[in-house]
Amino acid sequence: MIKKKIEEAFNKQINEEIYSFYLYLSMAAWFDSIALKGFSMWMKIQAQEEMFHAMKFYNHILERGGNVELAKIAEPKAKWETPLNVYEESLTHERHITGCIDNLMNLILGEKDHAGQSLAQWFVDEQVEEEANFSEIVDKLKMIGDHNPLLLMQDKEMGQRQPGLNPFFNTGTE
Ligand SMILES: [Fe+2]
Ligand SMILES: [Fe+2]
Image 1 (tube, rainbow, N blue to C red):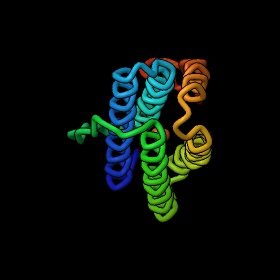
Image 2: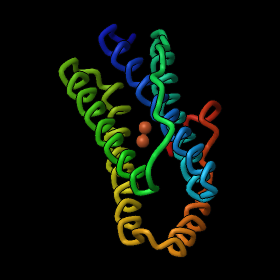
Image 3: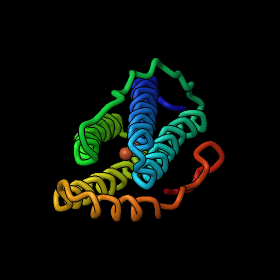
């Protein structure tokens, strides 16, 4: 049985992950609006991955006899200046999520919740990867600057990203 305190913290993290889904979907829509279809595809897949994260917490809460309680999702912004601007904000957002996961882990360690610790550790590792991925794209976009032919080449590369597992019907790792 999951402790109330931990159930609440996990429900809060579901909200953070679904907000991430919402933010990246909004970024995808902005990329679509300026015909950068590859960047849009990349962001849609990123959004899908965030829903997968939310569902990992959802499944964990239910498996341990807890209740999933969904709260209001904040409205994401809808317009950005440049692709670089989008990725810089995403990186800042991922760093915020890393902070949330670290706090979650501190709570879990304090409560000696071993099942929760295993889940939280998966997210600790995932955040290292997330920050590295966004950071690499920020660096590339800085190199590209305002050189449109290079930006279009990068758009093509971004469009190569492959979709992940269906977040609602898979519980494996991603
Ligand atoms: Fe996430
Ligand atoms: Fe993320």
